[in-house]
Length: 405
Ligand SMILES: Nc1ncnc2c1ncn2[C@@H]1O[C@H](COP(=O)(O)OP(=O)(O)OP(=O)(O)O)[C@@H](O)[C@H]1O
Ligand SMILES: [Mg+2]
Image 1: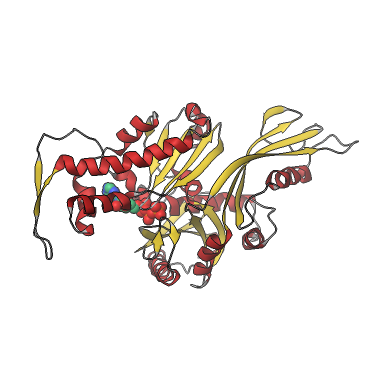
Image 2: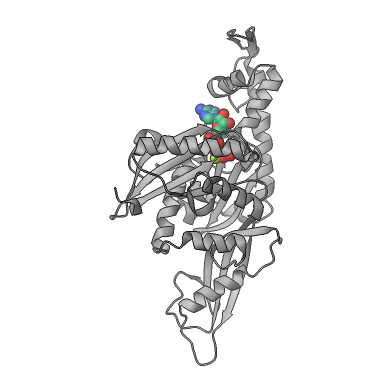
């Protein structure tokens, strides 16, 4: 198989490391050829805390993905998350020189450079500068300004940045496999590529990827990304609470959360209990269902309340005509949509079927959204920059010059 057509997404998640391999076909379709997964060791709240352990997890996941897809993996698009990531919106302005009144490609580049000329902390690296809107002589809603007549070009960008050394640690870990890194992509941006449609983005939608250690979110209004962030709470915190609250081993707590719990209070009979059978090292117990549900409910309530508070720092909540879409493994908790609707005051819609072919049984698994979304992101990136210049752009972004995406 021609190596040029292969794109690979890698998520180093808090719970699992996941590799997705796809073939980018000449007709523009993407066929997922296979996955590889390995339980994560050495990742905390989406960030690497033990390089060697993570290195091994990546190697295992890559080996499985290679075997399942019959492809030799050389490079990956990697997702990134963590509390160190920040974002804001900024506008660039370019005045055309006297005697010229047609906007060209250079003006477009310059306006982007201007938008990125903002002070981010010196220890941080720019991860994304994502176009929101162009304005030509004050006219808004301009989609392609090149070729238009005008004297002033303005552009709004969503800027995402993170602590340089944390991003570098991720890259180093992958390069030691050894694999090349094509690009580093915000997890929520990757997931959004496959869980919401363009129509939902135009109507306004909140995308939340709830994993094991973080809740990554992204807000689209009028088709543009307006807000993004990371809340360091995920499904593993819920499991931990269940384990501590009911005094049961973590493995049992995890299974209980998945098989028996609900995020909704009051939907079981008063005093209802069920039996947790014994296993080696655990004597078995009667568990009160409402106690279990309360533990799950209150941790997830805290997470959604934090999310709401962050969303309320900007005015976009009222423009989300398509509501919210939840993905990530924690979105499978029973009743979570109901709780999210109550707290966020938004309807929660199901994720759209991923616009991908192949391994269909796995495509709808919300735990794979980031890895699959990275593949979709790669497709857009390759259409935008057909030359293999990604690593050069990435290198300059992390090691100095900040003049790209
Ligand atoms: N059926 C299920 N019901 C409830 N929770 C589930 C289910 N399946 C998985 N989870 C939970 O989803 C979480 C893992 O989700 P996911 O694989 O998306 O996380 P991750 O990508 O590894 O972590 P992160 O993105 O936060 O770094 C775990 O907390 C797990 O308990
Ligand atoms: Mg994840």
